[in-house]
Length: 64
Image: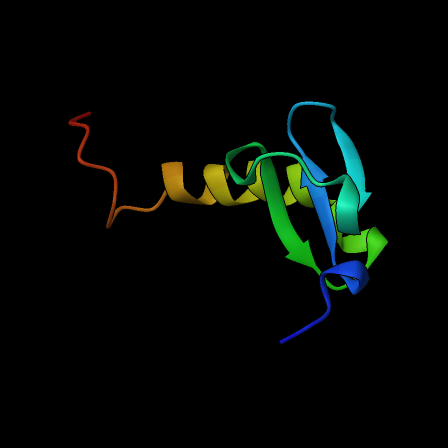
C-alpha cells in the first residue's frame, strides 16, 4: 500500500490540495492522487465525468 504521506487529495471543504496528515474527513475529499497536479485537476475531472454521464444514453432515462 502506498504511504499516505506520498498521496495527494482534493479537500472539498477548503477547496485546496492536501497531503498526508492535513487530511479532513473522508467524505470531504477526493483522491488519493499520485501527484499534486492530478489532485489540482480533481474538480475538472468531476465536471467532465458528470457531463459525460448526463449525456450517456445508457444512464439517461429522461424522455425527450
